[in-house]
Image 1: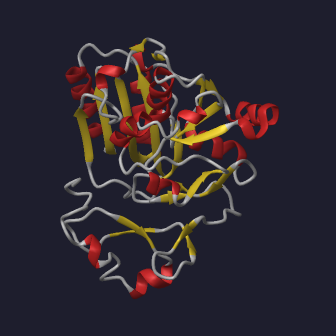
Image 2: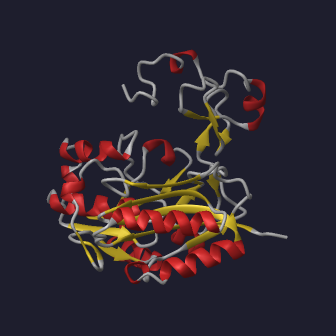
Length: 303
């Protein structure tokens, strides 16, 4: 019986011919029956894929056989077998959309000018040494942080990754520039870029959580500084790292603790809202409120 698995990985490295990499990656993933998303640019590759374990292993072996991707850190998790609707392999200006492709510089070893990498235990060591002076800075969209975040973290008011540049330039975080800042995100790719943007803007001591929340959760489960669940961009919607996870999210209807997002009932809107199981069942046809059904402010249009 096939065992479904999901892999998450990225590599920042110069790619002189992204279109050729796209064709090769499409052929490889399609041959193995994998689904998910692969983004490729002149800066590297960023992918989340799912399939049966033997197929995924063959894909990983072939991908790491390409010299530029040899150092790729593949993060594995259990899948459900239907986690992604299809396979998408695209060339984009950025492999993570900050809207600043010209600001990013990469070399053979990754992003240039980014924050110092800290392994999960090294994050704890920094906190033990510097105490409350350490700032955890969330590199994800704010709705992701509703169900899980590091204790006391700064959660920027951003709906999309493209909002980060303007958010940093607003000056609202300038008071943090002299403090140790640990950036974090799901698997590490957003922190790579975010930490370089912060360094460029005069933050003196910037770190990035190596391997992201995924690697941290694998090591510390529910016994570390992470609180709640991790939002993921596949059919699972969220994952927990231990059996004792306490949900941080609150039901939009009754306020009960929950980590479960539900899609808007309006097919033209992509907004996700938190609902507990009871309220989701009761409001199954209208889980999205009327103010979300108008075009103005709808995430579909971005207006």
